[in-house]
Length: 70
Image 1: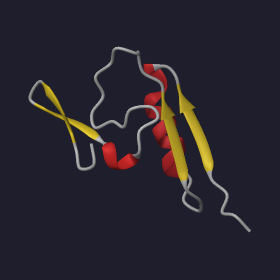
Image 2: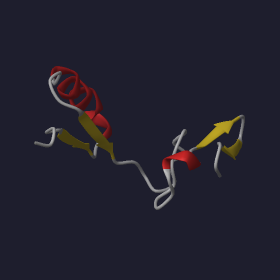
Image 3: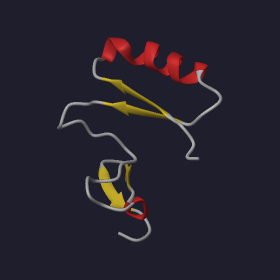
Image 4: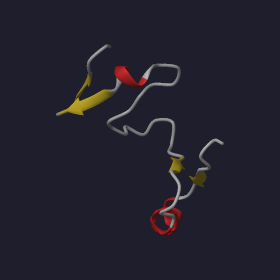
């Protein structure tokens, strides 16, 4: 039988604390939180849409860099 998981989505900055609090309350199954950000937001580290997790990108200073595999 597959393990169940919770999925939470946070779309507004004012809901971040409540979403994190809800995620922290759940301790018997995995929790995935989808934080929706502006398309131009520079959120690091990141994995580009359609890329594999080994192509994680991170920023050091102002220049983005690609991690192992990318």
